Image (cartoon, helix red, strand yellow):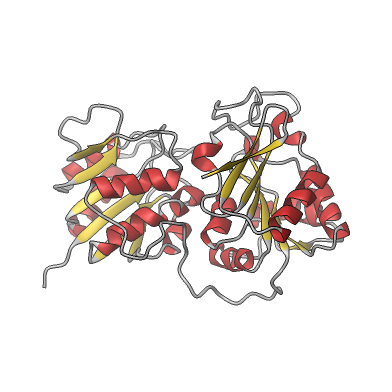
Length: 354
């Protein structure tokens, strides 16, 4: 029996990988096997995506924020691995600021006969499908448009939203809490820890049970933020367990980082503490009720800065604990459509419905 194998590549962070969910499901609907090539920070997220059959991990020297040196042996090993897989085709998914062409060259040398990607640069013979797209699309829609350009469509009844594999594992915490995730993969996108701690106190005062989450390297942060009134889960959940915790939450309070997209993937409303170093149009939580807090007109807007370039980090320090409580209460007491709510230059909140 002849099977059709498709290689899908997205080589950066967990949140970026979660946003590929609609693309992956479209590809899986037209393929017998989907192999996902991920970076080390995205591999666990790739395993959560419905439609993925196998996950490969590779540290890419032209995508990662902490790139390894270019190593001929590592390039040769990946080339050999792809040649042994012999995929019928490959889709390379990238953000608007990344180039798919180095990986396309590697895939060509491995014998992949059909390669599709979004590329602003002339690809020569590296791409069979050179897709062009409006860069102001939300990232899941941008990725799905690549799948469609390559000839893959979502199956009937698929809503095109983010999703994770179910069932999720059981967790020890009763549903109905607010999850506050104080960390961020990029420092410029983080709400200051002291404001996170104030928000835990304010949420508790308002009658909310608060779970504070974080990775293994964030345990000091989560302990300080949780204090005596939050429940500290820092370093105690895998990504799939965090998905389960978020699945039982009434709302998540989180910056523009992976857990925001994980919350969206399980359908949990998000209070998004969004620093405008990247555009909310592309990167806000997708497809769930969302309140976007933060000054979207701040001087750091669209800089892609990893460290805040403005003294005092005003885009997010302008957000108070009481702003967060009001946002949580609005999301949990009023039935709302999926929306992005973006701050104007004064930091006020305005509503923009997709």
